[in-house]
Length: 94
Image (tube, rainbow, N blue to C red; front, side):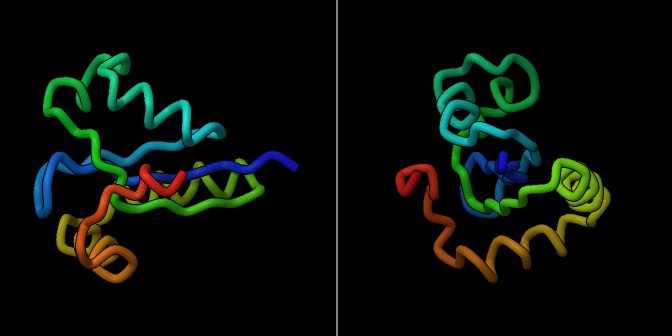
């Protein structure tokens, strides 16, 4: 079964946030860190993986990504704080 990841990147604690989805989290985070993903993350230097969720259902992953993108900033910050209060770069554990 394939695994899908919904993730949140930040440029620093309480900084700019980016929400994405991928089936290859290691590759995708590497692309962000190397600046290979043109656009928002490159422009704002958003490279720290601060939150990650996984599922085996692509539809659930897409719905979760859409849901998180609609959330207000306060809710997103609370989600990150609950799972990663120190805002550690979780990519180091991949």
